[in-house]
Image 1: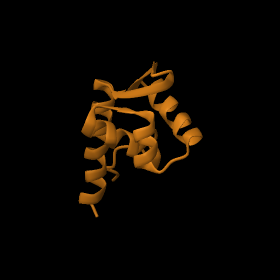
Image 2: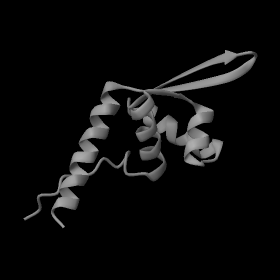
Image 3: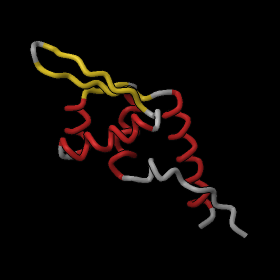
Image 4: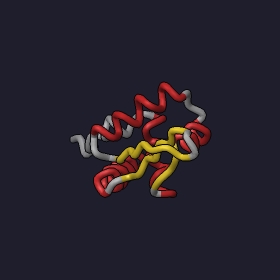
Length: 97
């Protein structure tokens, strides 16, 4: 009998999970902060942020600050719920071991 619920494949990526974890703790962050904290390349981080945005887990605001582009990512209620559900399901896997 299988009691394991499927893990959200979107959050099962190490980089996307790291981004969500960071945003959960700070609620919003600049792209450069996320890049620095995750150690990711700008290109890879951009792709993963877009996937999270497309899923409705985060919002992305692009603006300018002192003539420099500024990208701010914020976690959404849907993103918080998805992350919490992911953690609970992961606990089921660990607890069953």
